[in-house]
Image (cartoon, rainbow, N blue to C red; front, side, top):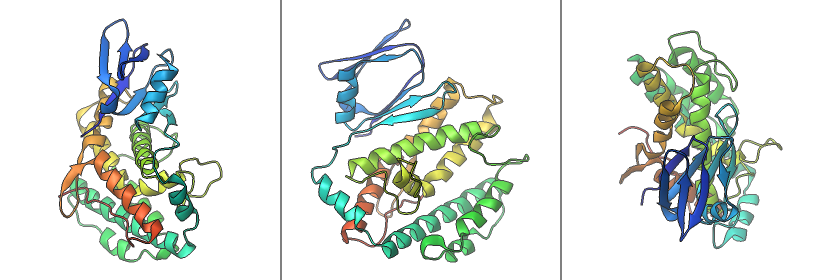
Length: 294
């Protein structure tokens, strides 16, 4: 079943009763079965949430995302015991060889560059050489084809003089919000597959608690880029508002395509996470990434 995404922007009280999440504010009272919720985004500094509510959400593997004063996702609550053979999976992940991790990163970057090329062609209407760049990605991407592709991608993607920065000017704020939601969704599914988000296949910063999520989300980033591009064509706003945040949250239910089926992104991420787990156990050699367009 497709899980719901709930955005809380007004000052609210969040409690639970009979496994129902109750969100109450001055405007309305909303009740939702906790088992139906995949993501809860809290974007109001005065919102109260009870510990029983938080615990039930986490036990249900709901990703609870807390936003900061700038309305950007800042923290994530997740289940630490979400798989029945957690320790065994952790051991396989920790024991993964360097050559295996380099091969998995190569696969990931090939998918990312391929998807960037497809999207860029859709937006500009012009052919590009991203397919060629993807064939040049080595094990571990030691030749940094990711950086080569990114340089051309961002110079071409937007019409105005754009520089991709974490704290940069518009539309970086839209991209950052979308990427943060994608990161949370990826972390949730990796955790649900029993994997340790802290231990990446490429990202290694000691300060990064979600290194693996940052690795696996890479091929999916063009979904956010596409949505931000669409928003810029339809809205004149330069700041995040309720409508734009709601638009960006729609990426979680966007359809993607596997060879044998199509599925919403949040379901596809589960398949990708499960395939990564099987790579660590030796059951398969490739991560199962979907095609972003049919």
